[in-house]
Length: 104
Image 1 (spheres, helix red, strand yellow):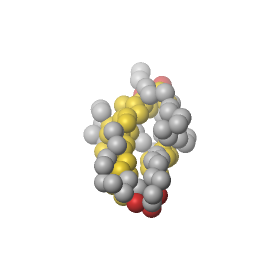
Image 2 (cartoon, rainbow, N blue to C red):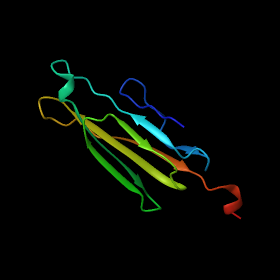
Image 3 (tube, rainbow, N blue to C red):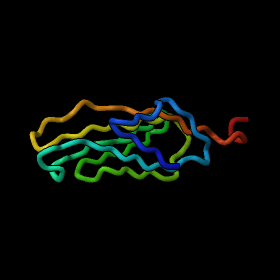
Image 4 (spheres, rainbow, N blue to C red):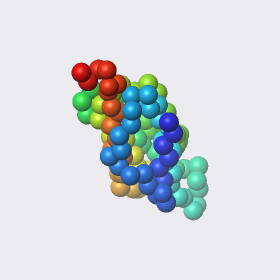
């Protein structure tokens, strides 16, 4: 499963995925008209029922997550440019459902 989020095309938050759809790649982007190499990203994935967390800050604009356990998640991200001003944080929420045989 690959999910792409950018300022020009946003995913609908709150989507639900099956237990087999548990690997994601998020790509975030930011504009810098003076120096695109100065853009810094900050993002993290937080599980809201299973204690999963992952944090990153740096120049990497892709976030890779594989074999996530079932639960509710929030992917939160923001960026800053050469002026050192962080943009507003954005959030994408999603759920990975349990396998049907584990719900009985």
